[in-house]
Every structure is written in structure tokens, then in C-alpha cells.
Amino acid sequence: MKGISRMSIREVSEVLNTEPSEEFLKACAQDERLGIQNLIVRYYKEWEARLVEAERIEALLREEKQLWLNGYLHIAGIDEAGRGPLAGPVVAATCILPAKFNLPGLNDSKKLTESKREKLFQQIKEQAIGYAVGSAEPAEIDGLNILQATKLAMKRAVEGLKVRPHFLLIDALELPSLKIPQKGIIDGDALSASIAAASILAKVSRDHLMGELDKLYPEYGFAKNKGYGTREHLMALRRHGVSPIHRRSFAPVQQQLDIV
Image (cartoon, rainbow, N blue to C red):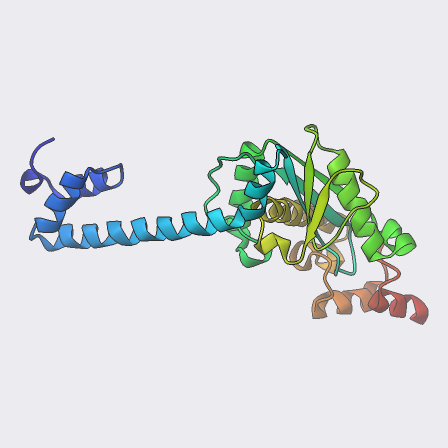
């Protein structure tokens, strides 16, 4: 490599985007060109941000690491999406992550933008040891109640795994019907990498499904509201009545049925 003084700013930038040596970084720091100084400042800011992110991910693996040390190899995180909407299924997902993965930005799905969720959705599916999605339909929600239907969706997700889980980490709940060692964690999607990954799989899977249901029932705006009781959704409910995918046991839907 030629000396840094003979390199253009573009050439220096390309080297900094790889894995520059300490010697190269020192040479950049000593270069008096303003463009090089700006590049080296940006490099160290990005380097520090990567360190902070690595520490955050490390903290998300605290539960998993303890379980791995205790001999549980396949740890399945479980979470749900769609307990609150007036329409559509409740969807659960489970995900078994490897000990080494590359999922920058992994977090509780509620803290991520839609575009970031979509990106992580693909990355999680590519890197996971195993994952599966389960759901409970509106009629099951009405027949059981939303809590029991959520547990049913979670159970179906676990049963859909092609890799046998040795331990379950579940967001806020326990699943006694599954005879697998398990632990419920309050706010688990913000405290466990496996649950966070499951929360993204569940959320994006449900969003995609609501987009498809919107094609069948376009008058309710499901692609936008995902079945939640927005002002526009409630107005459509009053105007068009109850669809086959509305949860009839939920108060706003029940009120509309009572009017009819």
C-alpha cells in the first residue's frame, strides 16, 4: 500500500471501510488534510457505536448464556403479536438462536421501525437454528379468551419447530401444557435476545397476514391499522358492520353487534 500522503481521500475512505491497521489509523490521525480528519473522526464514532451495540447484545444474552452453561443447548424464545386488535388472529413465534449470530439492532419489535423489523425478519430466519409461527383465529379468541388463545398460539408455534427445544424463554407467560423446562420473563422482549427475535418474527408475520386480509376486506383498512381500533377502523365498523375476522367478544365489536 502506498503512503497515506499519496492517497486520495476516496482511497483512504475505502481502506477505513475494511479493517485498517493501527499503523494506518495513526497515519490518518497525523494527516493534516481536513477531509482525512473528518474521515478518522467518523471512523472512531462508528467504532464506538459498534462497541456499544456489542455490549447491548451481550446483555440481551444474559439468560441464554446461563442456560447454555447449565447444559441447555437449544433455547427457544417465544413471544406474540396481536393481543389487542379488534380483528385478525393472535400470532406467536418461537426462535432458537445460535451462540454466535450477527443481528445488529436486535431489540423488542415495538422499539423498531417497520423497515428495520423487515430487515431483521429476513436475517433472523437465515441465521436461526430453528423458528416457527403459530396462531389462534378470532373464533378461538372468542371461545377461549385472549389470554388462553395467546397460549394456544404459542403452543402451536413450539410444536411447529423442526428442532427440539431444550428450554423455553417466554415473554411474560408460562405454558404448563408443554412439558419442557421454561421461564416466563416480564418484558422479556427487551431482556432476552431469543424473545426479541421471536417478537420480530411474530410482529412481521402478523403484519404480512393483515396485509393479505386487507385484500379480502379492504373497507376496514387492515393493511394500515393491523386490526387495531383506530378511529378510521371504528368508523368503518359502524359503516360496514362486523366482518368474519372481527373478534366478537371484544367490546367495540360486541357493541356493534348489539346495535344490529
